[in-house]
Image (cartoon, rainbow, N blue to C red; front, side):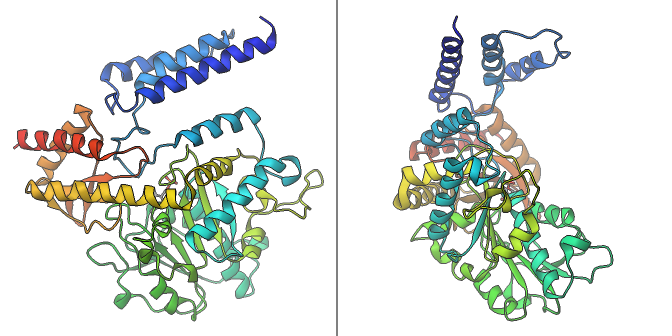
Length: 456
Ligand SMILES: Cc1ncc(COP(=O)(O)O)c(C=O)c1O
């Protein structure tokens, strides 16, 4: 076959397999069968000395791999905080993979770098952040937290006359880091990676929903970074960031907001009050692969102090075109080479528009309330105030909860995880997927309640 027809045949085969997979996600068991998981062992072999036919490689991936996947992108996956992927973003992701651009420098990837710039401006507008913010397109909220906190470290040390980029932290003066007692572990990990220490944080006390309790907020004395949260991963609750800024900003502290999924509440008229006063903070981290429903991986850091972010992230070298009048993507990210992840964000926002994003957020929150109402009506305890898309349900004691959740996962109509909230074991439901309908909620409830009544 001539080279181009081989290429066409291979990529068309991949597209058709991808389409078949996506067409089936709503009807398949959410968890893979034990047999499919065992079959995935077929991938485990010594590195072959000779290569294989490309079509055979693709076919093996689909025939062995696809059945062993979890229907994370389907409408009844409620585990962790996992978005699906809007069809348009899968399509643009495929096309940008075909482009295979390295989005390090504007000069060599003008299309992707321009699209990222547009996506950045649209998100800043959508979230109501300061217009002069810079944004970094990174792998996820973990790296977005890391990136924003690197800028925080740079600014706080510069303010006390210590050049942390040049001299590192050995012999540096101490900086206080205040985090919520309910901070996400990726914030703690980011602090460790930045040399600020996982254990030398001051933990601010929280209330019954996991929000920082402003009445018990620690005193700020000296150079300080405060890490707050928009959307607790269990309850969905928001720290009172506006009130924290009123205390922390006059004291010269840097305020960071981890809004991995919660920041998207700012897009909804009915939920923007949860983000009230957030624009006064200094940096914000979020994920597009959660509630915006773009393919993995896609996180974004926003930083008000562009100079601090650039001096923490940018590099120069004679062979790199780092001098440009345009925004040079790698000036803002830990990576130099990376994929064009901003294109999927642009595609989602262009396809949904402002109203579509708001409607998607509201729809997920309404599904969460439907779950909570049905569980309460059936006599089970809902442990959180359902302010967003997260629901915590308890079926009784620890053993009973775990048995029921195991059975729900195995039965396969839907998938939810287990958590422990303030000492109580619970099932955690997170509604993040664009394609979840009321019918999916009801189907899931029917399966869950049937299992709960069977396991006494
Ligand atoms: C509040 C919060 N922060 C950070 C993260 C980490 O995000 P990622 O896994 O995209 O790095 C999560 C993940 O669920 C989260 O809920």
